[in-house]
Each structure stands twice: as structure tokens, then as C-alpha cells.
Length: 261
Ligand code: NAP
Image (cartoon, rainbow, N blue to C red; front, side, top):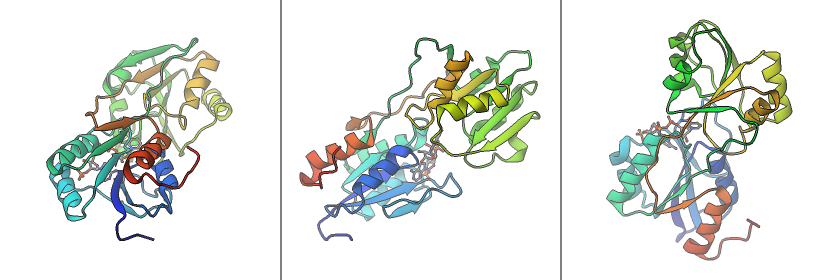
């Protein structure tokens, strides 16, 4: 139920952090929170907050939306690789004077026993596979799958939530449709079953998809890691949904229900 004086908060989502913050804020009547999703996933998981789906029409469209709907705060809880949305959020908040909080999830760092090659983008990752055909586990999302066509000699096991368009697939490809979180034993079994020789992934960070890195280490497999693009600074930056919730409790209403975070 929405209250008259509840502060309006727009959460830019599409991540496990946004979903976790939505769970923490559900039923929190001092805040009137709206979760925004891009519409990238065909069947997004049900959320416990009011949700809108689809783009705003760039930073100007978002600024208009913030003004018209009288939002008092924006929480950027987008994925570390969703750079356009974060840039738009920064620009729209600058235009409207609405404060911006960002959940910037920590990046993964190599552990003892890891054999990572860190590269700037997926083009460099595919080039780093080399000339000789290899069996590759590719978990960089369906949007950029076509880049693997530059190196058609490799066999790719491609895991994504929704199927990549068939015309974007490299000639030797197996598509595995699956949504995290993933467990290390199952990841190890998957790598073995498909005789994977190298893992290509993006440095998303977070717990939901890190098991493939633990599995690769256990099997002595190399990882080609696409490093993160830079994101603009927010007014407040936290590393998790729990920290965002704690910040909201401390600075916004001062009286959110104690949720043990
Ligand atoms: P992006 O390149 O930063 O954004 C592209 C456009 O999608 C934006 O300009 C915006 O359209 C719209 N958009 C993105 N996030 C939105 C949101 N939360 N609500 C409303 N519109 C949004 O983003 P992306 O990399 O395509 O990712 C799309 C979504 O998937 C994001 O929500 C992101 O958090 C999530 N995601 C991305 C990745 C990844 O690897 N990139 C992985 C997991 C989840 P307008 O300009 O029209 O407003």
C-alpha cells in the first residue's frame, strides 16, 4: 500500500542486487519504490515491488520521467556491464537534481591457483583463444555472441538466460539455457561433461555466477576474463543491497523496519 507522504524511489534493476533490495523494501510504506527493468529477459522473475519494463528514451526521457513522476531518489542497481543505463542515470540525476545511489558490486579477483588472462573486451577475449580449435565455455551473455563468429574454429558451449538469435551463433555451438545462481559441483560436472578447455567470461562479480571460476580452478582450466568498463560516480556508492537498504534506513526515513541487515 502506498502512503501519501512516502518518498518515491526509482530502482534501476536487472540484477540480483535489485531483486534483493526489492525484497527488503517490499511492504516498507515509508518508501514508495518502483523497480525498473530493461525488458532484456523474456520472462523476468516475479518481483515483490511495483515494476515497470522498458527503456525511458535516453537520459532526457529518464529526466522527464523523474520530474513527471516526482521521484526523490534513484538507485542504480544495474549490472556492472550496463554502462549506457548508468551514464543515463548520472546525466538525468544531474539535470533534475535528484540524488543518485549506486550499488557497485565488487569485482572478482584471482585466487591462488587461478590462471586468468584479463582482457578489455569480448573481441580481445575471442582473439586470445588462439588459432588452434579449443572447447570454450562462453558465459558473456547473448547480446555479443556474434563476436565468437570471428573465431569459428572453436567449439562454444554458450550459456544464457534466453536463446541467442540463431544467426548470431558461431558454426560450432551448443546453447545451454539457464539462469543462476549456479553451484560449484554442478559447474565442475558441466565443464567435465562438455570437455571444456577454457572459460571465457565477464568480470560480473557477485556470488550468483562465481561458481564457474571455482570449478575452473579446481579443474586447472584457464579463464579469459573480460574486465569491467568504467561507470560514472554516483553521489553515494555501496557494494550490496543490504548496504543500500541500511543507507536508506539511516539517511532517508530514519525509521525503516529493522530487517537485520
Ligand atoms: P545498457 O546497455 O546499459 O542499456 C541499454 C538501454 O536499455 C538503456 O539505454 C535503456 O534504454 C535500457 N535499460 C537498461 N537498463 C534499464 C532498466 N533497468 N530500466 C529501464 N531501461 C533500461 O544495458 P544492457 O547491458 O543492455 O543491460 C540491460 C539490462 O540487463 C540492465 O537492466 C542490466 O542491469 C541487465 N543485465 C545486463 C547484463 C550485461 O552483461 N550487460 C547482465 C545481466 C543483467 P533507454 O535509453 O531507452 O532508457
